[in-house]
Image (cartoon, rainbow, N blue to C red; front, side, top):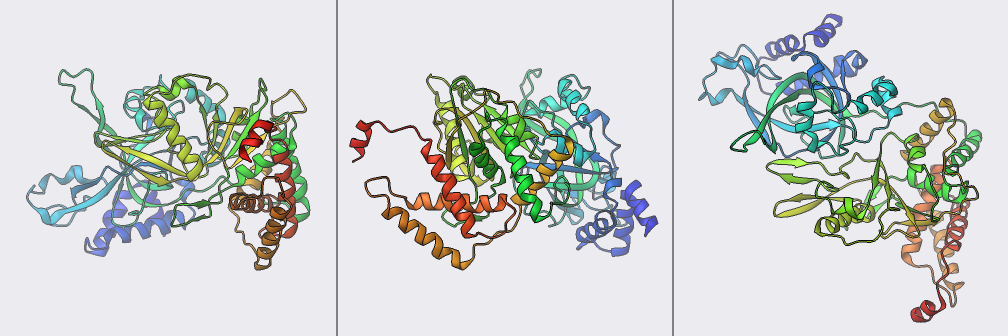
Length: 542
């Protein structure tokens, strides 16, 4: 067992050849190899011994081809199709799978019996992954990440990364990408934005970037040699580890400190911080056949004019992945601003919203200003609105487009109510002029991160008896609204989502009457902050 593990780690191709000889056939071989490497590497606890490719990796400083490596990445493009390759030599004694097809000189081109097919995917390092998450998952110091960001265009391997920059959803961040080659049916169901940890044999492949080479007189498509990973097995990417949750008695105190931390970026407005916490804990738990997604809560923080906040910095310190969108009329109209992915010349250009599930997206609309939106700007704004309201992202093709599910945590910053619709609008009322987050010590931040992650992924249920409580409260509120604005079905649905998130944020796993009433109180206080409607508009409504 130990000798086999050492062989897998140091000479994976030799172990693959041995497994082929033992199995004696190509039929079912991919699954045999997948199972054996999974047993040795993952189940055997040896994953940490496998060199890791990260967002800081560059083409010129990779391990040698044929090495066993791992890569935690997001599937960016599923449209690369299949690839035929010779599986064995002429007499069937030597295996050419998993990157050895360069040795296949003795296989006649017309010998179709030796051909197999594998599927190709383009995978990039997880966009928006925050510095603290990288440190935990990759053991990469934050200083190294900052240095890589500063030298992003100065790397020796920058030529290759420049030609694949259109595959990076966040072009201002360091990113590493490769072509994942999938054998058999082990990863057939991969979808764009899936985040997986791939373990495989490192290689290289020629790949059309879809870009035109300006140095060519014929302006032909650029053919680039890019890293390839011959995948042996993959699994859902791990989440950053955190400390154990405190006891039930201590959770309320930790939650209170967390709200204080968020409030420090909002001028000490604790009510607004409560809603922000719910928005960060939110996660889609059900999708109906109608397309409705339940569980998400997009939040609009309507800030006073001139109030400055670093709420994005506070959020980045808490979540494993975050992205910032600072929008102006000019950037929306810019053809280089792609919020949605776009297919072009058989490659998929990344969009700024092509992000991993659970990514917190802070959209700053405070500098939007006035101006005319051109076609590109209208299209970008429409893609953003659809992602916020329906949790769907459009993928644009030359003659059509289609939408795929997403699950992002949107926080919109605006002066006054945003022009984009959200589930929840909170008018922030600072009691302090400071919007700088008061950064706790590293240990406390770790507790905050672990708490949010645990609440976000907890199971939750609504007891049958709560249905009657909710229905009675709904009827009472409608009856009490005489002459006022009655509570609607949409209001009820929103409040049920908020109550679920509020209960989760207290570490509860089922909805209680107390949580429902706390939510109602918080929601009523939120509505009291809405600007008064002029009497003339009230008469028009009547």
